[in-house]
Image (cartoon, rainbow, N blue to C red; front, side, top):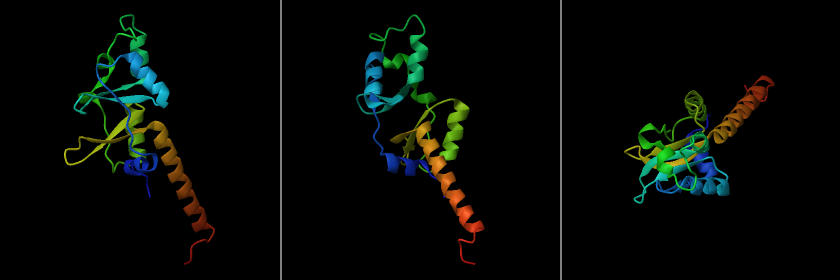
Length: 153
């Protein structure tokens, strides 16, 4: 049985750390460091998703001379809503890992509901590696049991 995004969220929880688009990069860095996470979902006052900001977004923009960590708003450097790649609860860990690898991203919001716009949680590449290793271990055990006669005929 393949692990799905909904299984990962069920195990790890669906808490999502968010930040306001007008918050500064400094505030984003502080929150990511405090929570030991690599990305924040950017939401407006109404709780609507505006984008996502990751460690990579921050580093890329801090390397440029125009970006000041204490003054620049997260909305300036975030990946906007229109460009966010999302996953669905029924997506397998392997499928999501492929999407993340092909798009060179390390976090993927999982959405659901009728409109496929309700944020259910965020899955990281680390979550996916853990799930795929667990699936592989389980499949290997089944095969070993089968070939060693562990199953009745």
